Length: 474
Image (cartoon, rainbow, N blue to C red; front, top):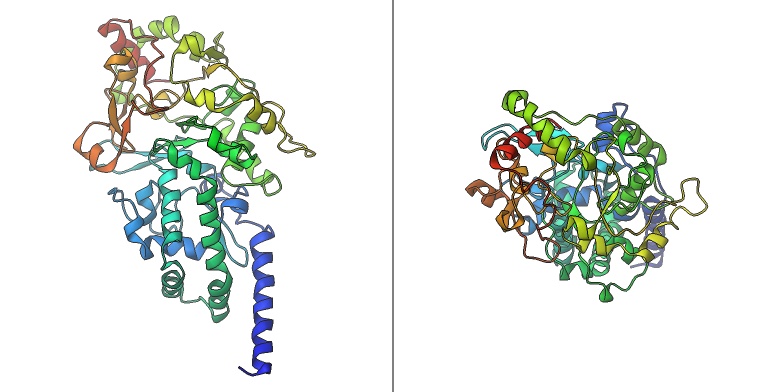
């Protein structure tokens, strides 16, 4: 190569380096959606800062590495992880955000954990419900897929070839950018995250609809995770009616009483940094979920006579802890009283609470509400029928099972199947289809125990039937 050509080549590389570093690190304006529903589903909350993946790499990975995609028969590509696609016209699933930088990035937003689906029967149309727990989405499986792709020796060559085929407008300059910088940096970033989260490999698989919320924060704060064996995996919650939750003790263990702090901590957990949080975007979502109503149980499937009789049982046995205005609503029930699996509670320590309250230091929104508790919070039950499986760790498949003594609750069942059982009130978890599509949940594994919460288990079968009919209406 001549000196002249070599100089030009070096200049191109220097220019590319400058573009890449500015494109990857400087925050740009994300796509705007005037419709709040579209904004909730596809808008950015700033999580691309730490967890963003270049869009074109992200788009082609399932086609390049189909052997690393789960074999769950839920569609193709990312749908097999439980991502929800509205239609073929949408390039991204619900919950996948986008920032149009020089290198466009895909991240996640609130909807990835708070959009669920259900069907009335195996052949039925899937109904998409916003604000519902994403009981079908397997975040851990998705992360493991990205890691498997990054470890594959074909990651660079095969990915670049697939991008060129998928995007006819992919230019010569884009090719250089991706070949010399973007693909390598993406692979390095994914592998670094695999190293950072290696501690999670020693815990039971989370499965769909569950995530370890606070142990990753320990990693972020520099805790030695080799000395920590707690399992913080818990069910994803709903986002309905947040106004009535302000001032109540939130999260499963009641460790915070501010809806706004809880929202921001969730966004940081999803990949945002203190500086990248899109406060205006999040405020739009917060205003919307403030009064967002939960969908009602199909009225034609409710026996009004039984429900009327069940209301008295509810007021007698459940309302104090779960009806808005009840004496114990939003308060923490000590572990020795509620008796449920202690792992999620144990995973959040006093030291972590103190560190959480350092987030946002010097900003108008600095956290101040985090605390350590000794039990689990009693919260309102709006939309209860769509919040299955039950208990904080999702260890009980239906309300019918929850009203049984722990020894009679299923020891194993399948999560992630979205066909609904309107009689037992929960998702079908023991059929051949559930086994084919779902994830086998074992209550004997650490953090998965289904004991405790014996309230109502002493009722007669007739009384349970009446109570169950009323619970459908919440």
